[in-house]
Image (cartoon, rainbow, N blue to C red; front, side):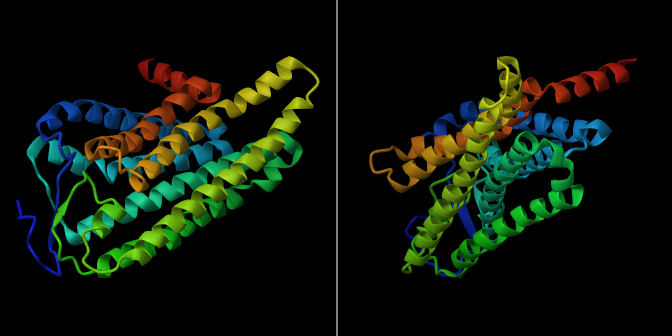
Length: 314
């Protein structure tokens, strides 16, 4: 391992520590991490497969669900393979360019996931508040344009973070006290005034979360008003049930993300190993739970999956 006092300006590699302070427990920690990653891979792949195979699911709600599943696959895969290689093989070195690439994919697809939640909330708003116009408002072309806009927004917002991180001189140490190349964990190693990176990163987080949460809240406030105007209790429960999965998935994403953000920015009293451990768990839990929540709560997906399984057995 490179000595922590090494001075250099153009690093070729960084050293990822994994979870500092818990190096002796890396093997044991890897077991639940690997299990959650495997469940996330299987569950999200099944969602994409079922929606692709069943023409009856070729609707905006399920297209957005596929986008969410693919995003979760990319997000978890950008982090976990390297993390597990640290835990299992002590493979801590990562190329500088690979580190920046990992940083871009992790942060970019985190923003993409938030944008998809907004799109899904808009879809539920149109479906419940304007059901007769749903098919004319959310055509396949509009859905594709929304997906493209979500990706472009994420790339435009995140790319400056990566470009700034790539141009700083790094002369403190090449050791990153983390299991992956998180933006501020890397920038904090630079020996220049990196306040512009810190402020811009904070600006992106506040902008994305505040804007997206506001739009989701507005959509669901209108949905709630529409539900309360329904004539019978059964109709209200049935309609609200169609939004239950989406609300559960939103909570599993934003609550851990907010916790991770707060502990990263104000972690004076939070042990480093706890912060890194929770950051990894927060990356794994939503991709693992999303397909489970949708698979259990969405009857159409559950029925189509059972039909495909029984058909293959026959």
